[in-house]
Length: 82
Image (cartoon, rainbow, N blue to C red):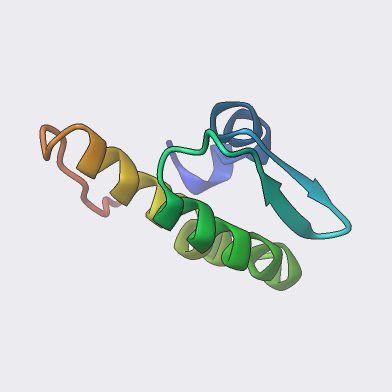
């Protein structure tokens, strides 16, 4: 997914969090406590900075890392170009 296609809506459903006044809250069933803590701290910062780069660095990258761990390194991550 390119950063232009990024939306918080699918993440809210998948990771069960809500944003209220730029503060993220999570349900206990979030994938890992580390991911929950990282997103709890970083989502409001990413929203405040409000750039595509901040959304990737503070929201998408931690989720991709969690996914990579969950899939036991059966996926690869790379930064591509158009």
